[in-house]
Length: 442
Image 1 (tube, helix red, strand yellow):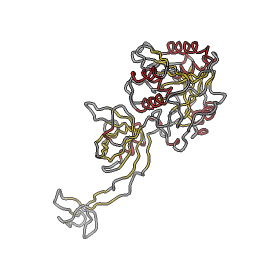
Image 2: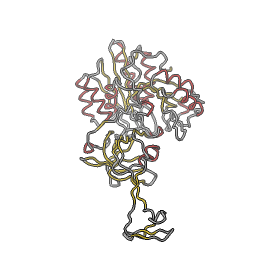
Image 3: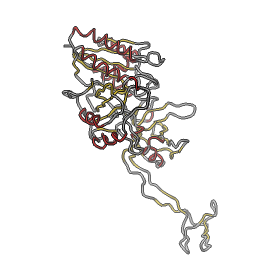
Image 4: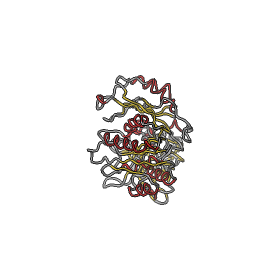
């Protein structure tokens, strides 16, 4: 039986559609055609900083085995489902699907990594499609071929997580989602840390439900399929669920972040990890956002901790010139209003410069704190009247207010790919040897 890898992307728009929903429909359709799945549907989040992305920049890959006589019908079914469920009326929606048979070549795996961590061109994707005898189908400009090939190439052999996604009935889409918040809190308490990012700990906001008009009702992220099933059974919905599927994904793995050796390597739209020294103290701008400059021997770049990042913004406020830090985030290009900037997702405090505070000297007679009489004019004691032009301010080192270590944006503002604190030490590896029986409905 031939093995097929079916990758597709760029089917949705900012106002409607969802590529994972097409995958969920195809799970049911392809099984009816006799296909057997060799892996959970793979949901691969690509570089979240590319300017043309839609909401989550997720591409999908379905990996199946089927009879040779079913191959053409399967391809037709996939193309038809994408055509029927894509927002083709939106100018920026350009779906594409790629069919690859048998082994995934190492060059396509490398292409996938570059697509997740950087920028790639359509001609590169088409060259690999031709080189490895794959088949590609484009709708409109067909930019989704890039994501489709990348989803095939990201076989998730390293760290990965799972997400159980439920979908709304057609008549309820576009209306407020009716999920009992108390059940989400209960689910979170009973299943964490095997599930994560269910509730924001600072605001208590529910994080499993999206806000847009797409067909997703809620998504539960977890370390293994059984944990997501258990969590799903605890959540109570006041509206019907049309279908649900468990995806294997690179969510919560930091797969997008690439460590660079110098700030000179910073490029627009790329996610990275960069070390440097705080060149200037932080500035708080309108909206409560914090900006500071990072430098090394090769250059400098601004870093921004936005107010919704919570603890990250609080920590950034306390930085001082000379602190050695590690910045994690995506690069916003320079414009007329600002320099090239790292939009921070995480910040590691490596070493702090001594915190020194200058105090007025104490009176030599009564030991009360003196007052300055002006620049270079000395000090005067308001208690006893003693004056001196020879005394100077006294420097006092105060205890460090920041602990060294890693600080991560609050869950409510984390990207899909951002690895949360609870996942450190829980990394998964290798593809699952077999799938659980109950991994989708219907």
